[in-house]
Amino acid sequence: MTDPRLLALLHAELDGELDAPGQAELASHLATDPELARLRAELAAVDAGLAALPAVEPPAVVLADILAGLPPVRRESVVVPLRAPAAVPTTLPSVAPVTVIRSRRMVRVWAYAASLFAVVGAGVLLQQSGLLTAELAGEAAGTLVQPGASAELLDSVPLEFPGVSGRAQAFRDEGVRLDIELANAEDLRVVVLGGGTEQALAAPRQANGARQQLQLKLPAAAIAAGRVNLRLEAQGRVVGEASLAVQPSGHTRPAEKP
Amino acid sequence: MSDEDAELVQQCRAGNREAFTVLVLRHQKTVYNVALRVLGHPEDARDATQNVFLKVFEHLDSFDPRHRFFSWVYRIALNEAINRRSRRQQPTELTGEEPDQVPGPEAVVAGEQTGKALEGALQRLVAEQREVVVLRHVAELSYEEMAEVLQVPEKTVKSRLHSARMRLRELLAEEHGPVGAP
View 1: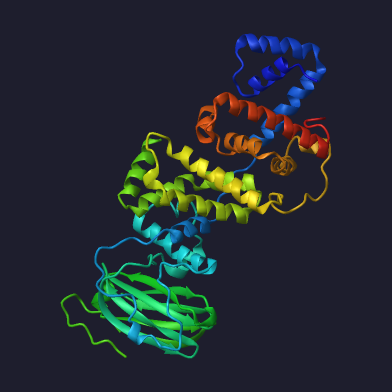
View 2: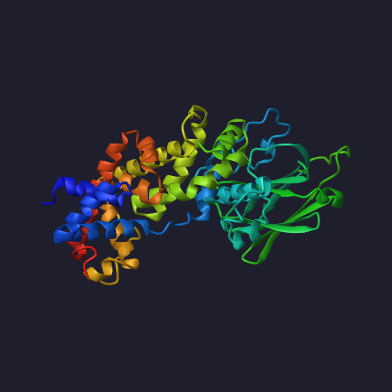
């Protein structure tokens, strides 16, 4: 059993808090007590091992999950609701608010969107930190935004195709914002063409007719082009296509299509 | 609280989401590693980290800016990880993987086997000891900072750390023979 006083000296030395007199006292004991010297070596090895434990980079999805789990930003005025209830097929279950995350999978979907938005909006450290994978960045082109925003409605079209039911709405919001609501029985890739860009969103299949909300921002150039086209793909084949009219502010808004 | 954290917290309170993103980026690695070393499982650490920052966001208004932001966050992280571990009950090896072969005493002193052996031993410490080891060696806090996080006197922090150091030595010796033996 090591003398508690000597043990205290050993720990103080390891903590880097042993003063000169203490060091001298410890050294004199170490010179004559091999057991104490062995204990010192073992404790030093423990400390060295702990100090050498690698710091693990958190997966990119950690940040994405956090941002996706945040409550929605409160807005004072809501011009147009995200979806028009009358246009939703009655055979499908009602849609939960977009801010209610009902499954971990959906958390992840919005999570990617939220993290990508953070990159674009804040211009902060994500890419420097290597938190965005090339696959994610390429898939959404860094333009997804969090749900909850609303603005002037430019156009609204149904998305009714085999195995797919939903609606796409275009809003004016510093460019064009697309809100897409989908109930899809198989994994979809939603390709959006507008403003000279082509972007793609992943829309995982939803069980039991559940709906998911996707959002995408397009540059102001999309307004000048006048139209935004959507293409829904499943396993490389085109499931359906749709086109939305996006007019500059002040132009007559087209009547909503049935 | 660092000037940067203080400024970011202030911006968050004013509704700036991007400021919160930056705060997460500044602290998520430490929080994740604290959770990982307490919980011993990456998936659990991931969930714990998410919960920590959601709690931080939710309670940001109640944070006292006279204190250091990271102390507050790390306290939440420790509580979250320890509570989660208590609920889980069964301790888990860090990676769920066993070493290919049991290392001899000489292998325990250096190299990656050291890390695996220590990670395993860390999981066998009592919560109080594991906390101080994680704050000291993972979060790299000073004793003063550790005392602030744990809300105990500095001498208590040191006492716990010394006990943890001795216990880790014992655990490693039980598993692999004397630590640092030639």
